Amino acid sequence: MSTDRLVDYDEVTTRYEPVIGLETHVELGTASKMFCGCSTTFGAEPNTQTCPVCLGLPGSLPVANAAAVEATIQIGLALGSEIAPWCRFARKNYFYPDIPKGFQTSQYDEPLCVGGHLDVDVEGQTYRVEIERVHLEEDTGKNLHVGGSTGRIHGADHSLVDYNRAGIPLVEIVTRPVPGAGAKAPEVARAYVTELREIVQTLGVSDVRMEQGSLRCDVNISLNPVGAPEWGTRTETKNVNSLRSVERAVRFEMRRQAARLDEGDRIVQETRHFHEDTGTTSSGRSKEEATDYRYFPEPDLVPIAADADWIEQLRAGLPELPAARRTRLQQEWGISATEMTWLANAGALGLVEETVAAGANPADARKWWLGDLARRATEAGTDLAELAITPAQVAELARLITEGTINDKLARQVLDGVLAGEGDPAKVVEAHGLAVLGESDELVAAVDAAIAGAPDVVAKVQSGKVQALGALVGAVMKTTRGKADAATVRRMLEERVLSS
Amino acid sequence: MSNLSRTDVEHLARLARLAVTDEELDVFAGQLDVVLDAVARVGEAAAADVPPTSHVVPLTNVFRPDVVTPSLPRDQVLAGAPAAEDDRFRVPRILQEEA
Image (cartoon, rainbow over all chains, first blue to last red; front, side):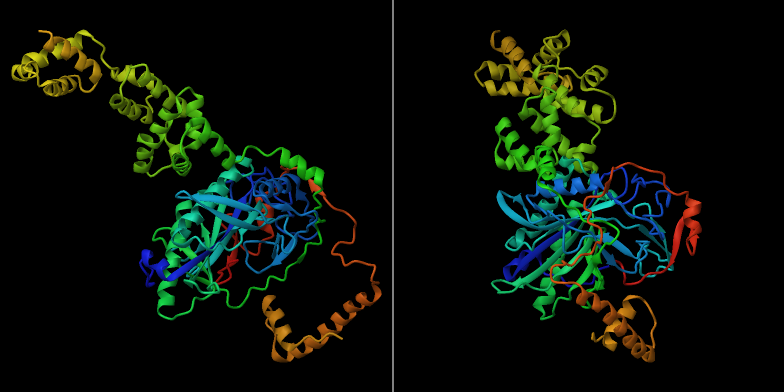
């Protein structure tokens, strides 16, 4: 669908330097809305969670949700922001029916949290992303465009609006422009959103489910010729709704903008839409004519004045943050920073931690989650956490191997069973008879049969070519369909062949 | 004496989605000027020791606990809508105005 000319990605950064910026919206997980007591339950029947306040009916009076204010301050504290000693809400006026009031209650020149930073690691290098502000506002309703073939605005005959989401507390976290990431800009953008998501999740103030829209990203990108004194004109790609898409959107915009600049065209400052299916962006609303929202202080809500006691109380209640936790676990498990990054990027940190807590040793826990299970998650196109196996089951699997009940090869079959919903590893082992054969009658018979079936090999081994024994081991493993322990088989063969 | 230009009024009319004729631009510019002048006189009354404020009551930190209260029944909600369809508010198609 995109007809844009694109420059090969590797070429872009030979001529241009990118500057990225991210605006992230986090829908808070409060029980009630920002300014009224309507429920925030996701997926409720349309327009069943509205009231005079969130519908903007005359005479209604909004009152701020204390939990939402505290959650915003906690996000600010986690990012190292200054908490404003005094701030106000503001009305952002616009005519778009996703808000029934004719304005969105937001914050303008007085955000609740100012400044701060987030350090992100990409391939062993740390990039500092400076935070501009963190402010509190309300979410908008959901539009359904009817009549258009694609459900998008263009071609739509009319729109249908559900205001259940309108008024849910929304925190906007805005970065300062991030220069200097070069060719790593897409990964830095993704790493930033990943880390931010993890922080918010750790704070427990939002479920940050991108697929449900409780975390949404707008991605700003500009390019300037290498060494140029000024940054280029930026585009803003709206509502990028997965971590992978953040990276793809930056990459695509860099390639598209480079092609335009190469041909002497200018970049139009505009809003662009990201298309998940093709990984491309297309032009939305032009920002050439600056939007005039006529912000003014919200007269119906009194200012927030966060005093030091309140802030310190919230700071004291902060949980261990992801970066500190990674440092601690890295030391506890004795692994390198690179390994830690792999674990974190794979979303396996919590899973490994829980597996260790369930009794596995850290190396085994890491091996299974980053190895077989990561591969299966990739094959299934899902996240590790979505796999039908619990950390406790992985720990049990590791224990069965340590105890010698199964070997690695059998363990993979056990995994198949657990993932297929057949129950805990021990149960799968029993149900399928997957346990390693000890020096059982079955194994002795298999060993004897292998010796009897290959007198030439036996002769070779006895004449000193001990490595020929491998063929016999292979034969036994084959007869026992992998259930035998190779070391046991080898020892049994040696006893019989070499001592005779 | 404030000085609201025709261009200002045209801009405001567009923001408010009001269709205003050329003649009306002149009329409204004059009328709005008078309104602005009247409001500007507040500035004359306020002495230097009166700080500007957006709120007339000396209150901060008025919050409500995060507790769910009943919402309105949907039929009542949609009764106030100019048009409704599929349990939703029906609005004219929207182009180029996504916030």
